[in-house]
Length: 154
Image 1 (spheres, one colour):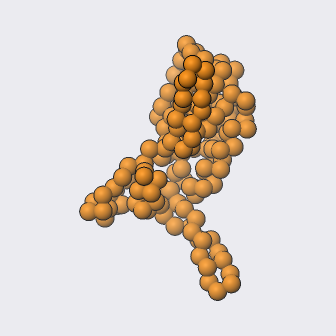
Image 2 (image 1 turned 30 degrees about the horizontal axis):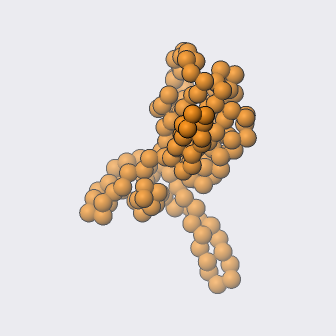
């Protein structure tokens, strides 16, 4: 199941049958701070033996990337059947390996200026930057950049 966007008030998840013991939730299910996420996941844990959650780019909107990533990583502790896959894999019986990562596009240098002004990712996702001044360190917020997403793409 992908791109459900449960963060929108008018989205009603369609009924779906549990036809396999595994559910893969990939790409933009809901942002991690939304109250609808945990009840939805716990309900699915009643229906599936294993649930694999892979974040989409919209999971990091309206907040700071690392904070959202930590909230998503905490899903591993929600229930024994839950697995948040961020640049990692999980092995299942019969030599089945599930790989999970958020897919970030590589933006060529010659397109960087134009691209950085168009996708919402570069406006809706922020990063914390540590700055050192003398003996003191402080964190400041900055927008996601093409350098960030190109690094993650690599």
